[in-house]
Amino acid sequence: MRLSFRGKAIAGLLTVVPANERKFVDEMANFNFSRARSLKLKEVMGYDRHRIVAGPVCASDLAVAGLEHLFARGQLERDEIDALIVVTQSPDYLMPATSHVVQGRLGLHTDMICLDINQGCAGFIIGLMQGFMLLDQPAIQKVVLVNVDVMSRKVSPRDRNSFPLIGDAASITLLERRADAGTIEADVKMDGARHAALIIPAGGFRRPSDAETAEMVEDEEGNVRALDHLKMDGSAVFNFVMSEVPELIGDLLARTGTGVEEVDAFLCHQPNRFMLQKLADKLAVPHAKMPSNIVENFGNSSGVTIPLAATFNLGEALLTGRRTVCLAGFGVGLTWGAMLMELGPLRFCEMIDYGEGG
Image 1 (cartoon, rainbow, N blue to C red):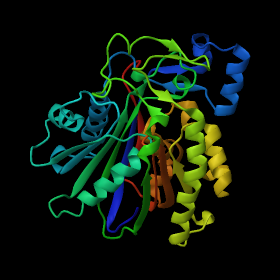
Image 2: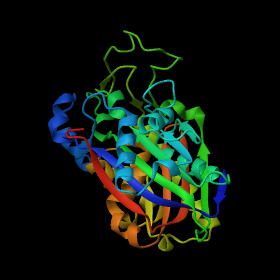
Image 3: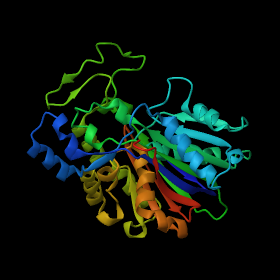
Image 4: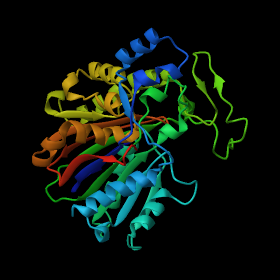
């Protein structure tokens, strides 16, 4: 589905990562694999360290910390938020919505829209689309988009397929109208027929959690997890990304008449370094233009990896100048989307740590 937005812009980006850092080499003993095999995986996939919450930290905790940081520095005022979107797969509660929880904890005014979106790896793209559409309403001047996940709490620490790459993080994105903003072009596709490729089998109404779903079981690859944990079919996800995403991004560039050389940065969701480099090769994009260093430093925090790529790699540049960027997210759903836009100069573009030890 093709979408276009005019007169809308990202005005600021803040990312929040837990201070609690875990190293892959310190966790290898938890997996049923030899040290040599694990070290080989570390080299190929780009595993090194990841940031995960310590204790019962929830999505709203990271979101509130980020917004309070902006309020304290005068970069955003509480009473100027007209809409609050929270994109998360790890809500505080089944009900109410986490956006309402954040609104209440921050003491925001009631004349506003609060909205939760259940999306993951492409959640930043989906959230931007929704936020830009809300800005078409005359009563809405500023939208705050929060992307946040604490998925480490739903991944088995004995699952070498998923745990080494998982990360927790939040991003706060300020959206507003801007008269001089260029046209933003986007494309998104979804295929629920392949939803089982990335899934937490139990915990919802289809399969409520109980003693049986909490039982740890070893799979044929040596990973140990329960039905309450995230399960990823790595081969299916890799094949999906390699077959669908290059075509989507290629079509977006073609229909906008944009050459790869005209794009300053391809800021993509980062499942791991290996997959990102293969994606860059398929698109004939130089590796330097498609950063792949988020998982090795912070972990895979679903859709938050895209704003993390921006704040970690382009922070100073986006404060002072304007860059042509292609954003792309792909994964759970299955969902894949891309967006071509001018980004910057931003009011704020930084990363902060949450808590003393997460």
